[in-house]
Image (tube, rainbow, N blue to C red; front, side, top):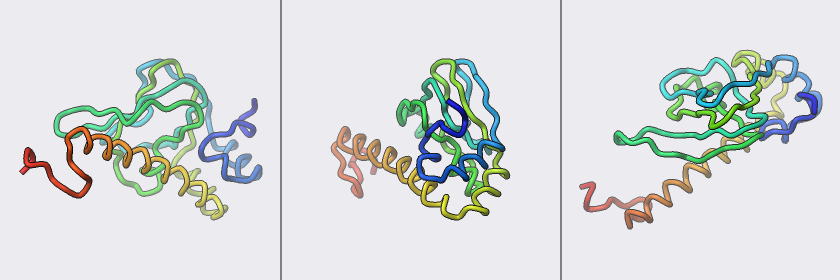
Length: 156
């Protein structure tokens, strides 16, 4: 499968022309287990696309590390930070050797500027990330018998 043919969460919503343009900017690498693809508190210089393998996304809160899930091929990491300039709050770590694609932040933004139709694909990726976070929050709220929007007496 060539770089252009590989479908991932971002490429699924864009034209072949945009995929080809992104492919010109990207580098492919195989990284070992334990590699941090995104690290909380450190601005990413690249958008990361997972081609093969699996990676776990975790967030640090109240002194505990919480897994947001294990992600497989096709997932895109660092998109929010690359677009907004905000520092990531999550860490994404390879659970095995992974093949990834890296798209430099500025190159990605230039392609996005030239192809505003790409924003729909970007919104879909960010919406999926938000849905994962929402699911986790609701799951944890049920575990503590707290309805969303309400505070447990333990936290008062």
